[in-house]
Image 1 (cartoon, rainbow, N blue to C red):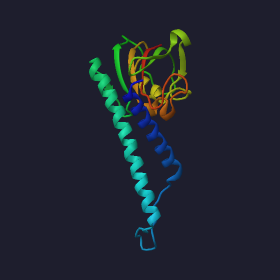
Image 2 (image 1 turned 90 degrees about the vertical axis):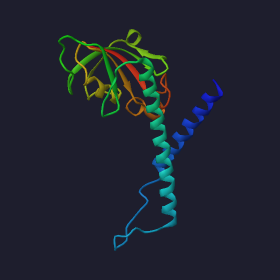
Image 3 (image 1 turned 60 degrees about the vertical axis):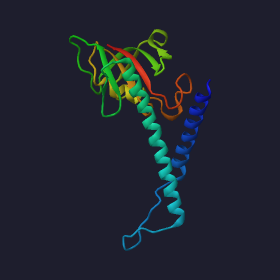
Image 4 (image 1 turned 180 degrees about the horizontal axis):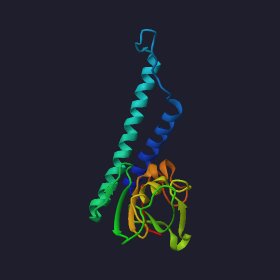
Length: 188
């Protein structure tokens, strides 16, 4: 592990700790008096300042992750489409006549799950084909969102940002904390 990796890891862990503390200890910090004006309590002002710092730190983490995903897209020169949820997809082998995937459909898929650096985490070759009902099963929410842009028979890449994948903690097995993941899928 290089010195830069240690620094990045420390910064991510520190930001995660601040974010957790903000969620736990910083409820809404303003109140209004009878006239509708804000009460100026020094403790509440300090809490608001801390909350703002956590929000800026979180924004920096989100921006950093988006930059990493943008770099992946640019370096692989693939025409990914970015959805409103932040999931990106690229259909590299479209289905000729498959049905569009929508909510409540039962689908199956072969898949490989990788980190942005290419590390293989999971594969249907080892774990078996995955079947689920769209928007009703315990699977990454980014998968539920991403497959709805596909058709049965499509082969596609889905880039799922960490909040829609395994979030702040990772999966506690192979996917590290705050890691966007890439699903290479074949939908059946």
